[in-house]
Each structure stands twice: as C-alpha cells, then as structure tokens.
Image 1 (cartoon, rainbow, N blue to C red):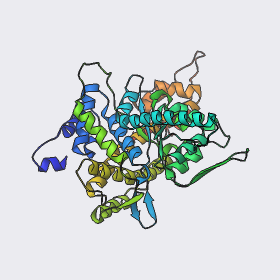
Image 2: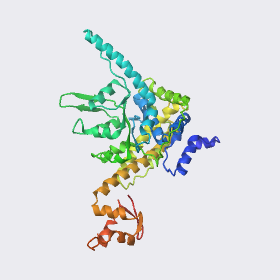
Image 3: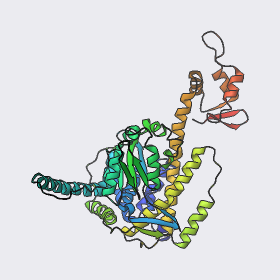
Image 4: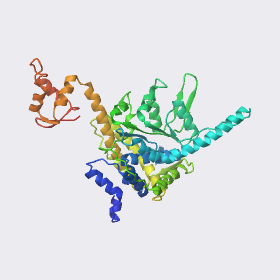
Length: 446
C-alpha cells in the first residue's frame, strides 16, 4: 500500500483491505496486497464475480504456487540452512462457504495438468498390457501427478518417488485425513508428517519386510474443515506434539452467505492465472537455492531477534517458532511469484518479498491463536463439573464480585446455596476462565 501511495494512486487491493477492516469490522483481513499486481486483480475478480472469500483465494494461490514450485527451489538462509516451500494449509468455514470451490479455482492449472497426465498414462498402460498379453517385454509406465487424495503411507511414498518435484495432499475434508492417521499403523502418522513438514528423510518399515523411503521429501497439504470439527485437529496428542502448530489456519471473519449472480470472471484473467502457475510448473528442474538480499536479510534477522519470548501459554511459543519458519517459505514463494509476473528477478529474495512474508506471518498467527483458543476453551469447559459449566454460562460477560456471588450462590430446590461464597471466590481465581479487570470487577475469557 505504501508503494502505491508514493505513486499517487490507490489500488483495488488497498481499497478492499480498508473496506474489510472498517466496514466489516475485520481486524485481520488476508493481506492480498502482498501479491504481485496481476495476482491481486485475479483474486479480487474471483472474489467479486464468484464471491469466494479473499482469505480462501489468497491462501489457495499460496498453496498452488508452493505445489508448482516443489523441490525446484529452496531458500538459502545461510550456510547449512536451506528452507523448502511446502505448506500445510487448513481452510476453515461453515457449510456453504465455498471452501472447495475456491480451492478448485486456485488449483485448476494443476488439476488440468494432472488430468492430462492421467489420459496419457491410460494410453500407455493399455499399450503395456497389450504387449504383456502378447508375451512381450516393456517397462511398466507410472502415473505422473502433483495432487493426491486417498492413499496409504506406502502409496504416498510411491507417488512421490514417481514425481521427483514432490506432491501435495489435496483433500476436500481434512477431517477424513486425520481419521486415517492410525488406519494403517499403530504408531500414528502424525510423527511422519512432522518429518514431512520439515523436509527431512522419512522411511517406513513393515512387518512384511517391505521398507519405503524418501530421502528428499516435498509434501504439502491443503484442504478444508468445518468450524464445528476443529477440535478434531487437537486430538490424539496433536495439540502437544507440535503437529497442530505446523498448520496454517485460514479462518475468515464473519463470512456472509454467498448470493448467486450471472457475472463471469474475465477469461483473460483466468488465462493469466493459468500462465503464472504453469510458468512455475514448467520451470526446468533446477534444484536451486536462492539467497536473501543483504539488506532484506538484515531486516528479517532483526525482526526475528526482537520478537517477544514471554508467552502466557506454551502453544503460543510453538506457534511463533513454526510461523517464523513459514516466513522463509512465504518469502521464497512471493519472490518467485514476482518473477513469474515480471515484477522481479529470481536471483535473490528481495525486501518486498520479506515484508510480504511478515504480513502473512501476522495473519496466520492471529488465526492460529483463534483456533487454539477455541479448541482449548471447549476442551477445558468440558472438563469442568456440570454445575461449574452452568454457573459460567449464567454469568454475564462482565460482572462485579457481588453480581457473581448473587448468580453463583443462588438457592437450589432445597433452599441451599448452589455453592458457597468462598467456593465461588476460589472459582474466580481460574485464569483460564476469568480475567480480573480491576478490584472487584471481572470478565469471562471463554
């Protein structure tokens, strides 16, 4: 936005952000202006004509670009430290919020390429079967694809080995993906995904004697979930082993019901988007590292060194650390998108990519805390006694000690107080439930 102000003009992206913050009372809109101008136009056009939420479009574009880049490029942070660009993205919303439709729009160029490869594979496998039937010999063809949805752990590794640039797990409902974690082995797949997120080698050994291994993995994740099942992401130890904090939650503010219209997206913009993603897909397999420009690197390191490290909850620290790694991934993706739209070179990661990545850090951090607060709140409330839950529901959002005692110590059917005044005052000391605003005045935190 500052660059546009210097030029004496305001872009549609700037206007959208201002509108979102002020008119919709949205304090955490997706920062669509971190993208190149052409991608901003494409996202805003899809938002205007299809009414897809900007949050879904922006995060979908990031994930699609990440998948297209794959293992071709890494960010060289410093000697011995390189960062891949795989993302684990969770689209959160209600039924009917067009989560799946928005993702399909963003991933269409990759879906189209996978469809082409499948048709090609179908012909080759038929030829192979014909030759085999005639007792000939030929090498069995394999299916090229970037996206995978229903699979076993072994199949994931096999598909990855056949697609050296990496794969993205693309599923409509991520809750089903979570349920499959213990379907194939008792040790749980969460630990495997911790390694896949980090890009470290993984191997799977089976009792049958079969072993599977990926030395240089690139696996991304993208899919949706409903607000009502968010708690599933925290189950099975995933809230404490770091798994949940590796997820990028896309959780828009107060989405409006989508109204149908007959307007279509400008086909020229659709074509431009396809060209941008395809330019990243068809880049020669380089296995190349891009450094960070010196001034941008100093800016980034100073930002990181000055982050606060005093956290009220352990999960806040974990979220912070994982998102700091994501900053590096975002920066490389943005730089390559600037390159794909002729706004920059790909010699090194520049300041505008770093600053854009920090904006994305803030956006995803707010959402991560929002999800954690909701999931831990529900878990904690459910751990209380039935009477404690009832009293908590009856208390107003803000109350004085006297008001709280009057509510909590109401007489039961036998004419006795439900709890004593002393018990209620002890209850008030629970920091997870109450905040002391000032002497004698409290507010509920959940």
